[in-house]
Image (cartoon, rainbow over all chains, first blue to last red; front, side, top):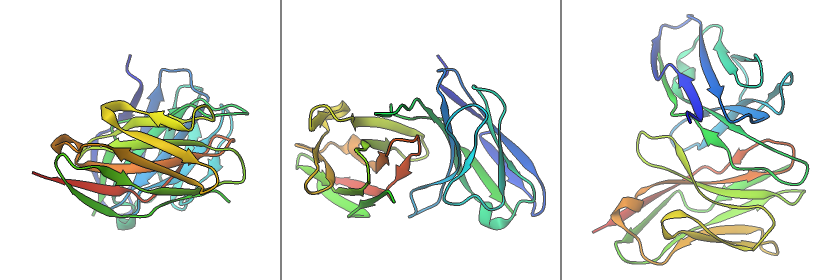
Length: 115
Length: 112
């Protein structure tokens, strides 16, 4: 049971380059998320998808785009990378309902450096 | 608006002494609340969760947390710290609607 799989694990980009972070989950969860983690700031939500076919901005969406390709996959794209986007990125999934949410399951993270 | 505040950015304890990591939340709805742990250079692991059942929640590795609605708190405790508990801990609130909101994290150090 793989859970949440992110690729790549590490990436170095030059300023202005583009890339897509891939995320897939095999738990049939309806919600998926992209977070970035920076020292002293916890995890900040970039975008989330409450269900297949929907996406919404989180706290720090500028410079990013997302695609919920199907129920399993949720990708994050940096169109023109900037040094401020150097961070560790986490994908997560969960199942939420009207009355309560299950816990989120996280990928192992992508360490991105923009030079 | 929903938010989470972890009251201490860093907590240091001696091995064998109690641990208290504090979390306050703000939510317009009855939230689900979680504590996650992250060891250095690792992903996030669920410690425990509160989803409107018992207010005292037991988790893995001897941790527990108590939901206090009147105080809007969900503090994490452990009676006796172990060296392997050294990590960063995150309090998370999920108001209904699917969005996960993280606190800023508390780094726990355990001295021998």
